[in-house]
Length: 334
Image 1 (cartoon, rainbow, N blue to C red):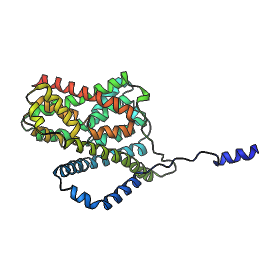
Image 2: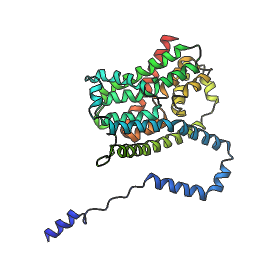
Image 3: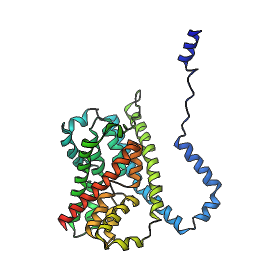
Image 4: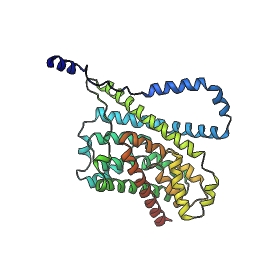
């Protein structure tokens, strides 16, 4: 009898049934069915100016970010499949304190926005890079890469100091956050990024599988962040900006909060900042430094990659550091 029970247990007959997970494809199918059934109500609702604005913001955020999400997931998959596990630990300085600024500077090589840096940073952590260095890369990559620097130069003609200020403040904030993690971060705060199993697959198939896995995860959280950003965007009265522009403290805090809410891609945010002529250069610098490091879609993607416990600690601290470093840089230059 015991032998029969053991055989049944080994075969899994007595094991509790596994809970079936709802997949994103099934959720999308349900939403499409609901949209078809409610198309009449949706058509009437689209006549609302507020909903039209919401739709415009949501679609613009997704369209701006998706190419860079794709770039990030392709780079992440390439790192996971083609790069030897010990490459990055050998390429960066052995001393974690020195590895942080080295990774921050290396972030300037990636021509993408914050959506691309999250999956790449996750791949770096999986490859054994010290988390402080990977996080410095995550913050610096969307803020100091050549595309962002060129767009800032074009958006602020005749003001090269803004380009230098953005580069210096962004790199400094990224390095400070990396060092803070080395000093104060705890392993149980940072969930190990999910590793997709590539065993038994060829290199090409493993690359396609890893890219599809990362794209599904990153794209889902991007949509959540875009939804929240669009909702808040249409609820912020434009008159609030004009009312606080003349107060130095309120103007800094207002543009910092606006950068979080708008969730504009870092390749495009310089043109938005340049249009806010009623604000000081320091306030606009805060907007440019905070945006690529702390915004709604980035927060959602960090939750997906590293866990809620990490994001709830990392994002507010990054916000405070970015604001302080930007204000200090502005005080020195202007």
